[in-house]
Amino acid sequence: WSRIGERAVVQLPPSQGKNLHIQGGVSAFTGLVLLRTHEGSITKLENARLIADLFVAAQQTLEYQELAPSNKVVIVTDNAPAHSQVEDLARQFLTEDGIMNGNRLVLLRLGPYSPMLNPIEGCWNVLKSKMRRFMATKKQELLVRGEYGTYTAHRLAIMKEAVAQAVPAITRRLVWRL
Image (cartoon, rainbow, N blue to C red):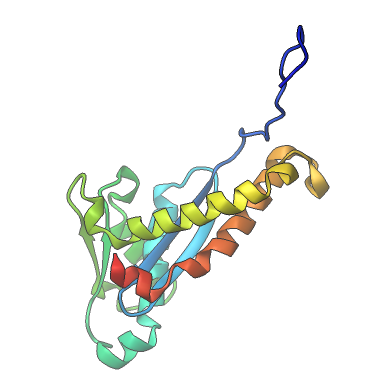
């Protein structure tokens, strides 16, 4: 509201700046296998590193070691352009890291427009919902620079806090439901 003859002014938190991207992988056996955040754009190299790290993380799970230590690790991805041609790069990373069983890595690509077949899409929806609720509670805090010097740096720090607060929602039970 405003007085007659004056403009109504609403102070909003800044929305410009680097985005915070979240990458991860889930398993029906363990729930969340790996989750990482990245500021700015994600390149093919970062996606290949994620695939390599998912492969290693999956092999380190108790379920894999007990049930299938010699089997292949199948990683399901969508057909996003950033996910193309990452298999060879991921195997190269695995070789550079001294992991010699990179031939057990299999990438399975889903067909176009099929997010309903990818369980992590439902996990992202739950994560984003919890993050939105958390960010709504921090609206006033977003209006000050705080100790970060800039609004965007402060916004990024709060978004990372929102991710950390929301991650426990990705459980094995959630993955099974999806």
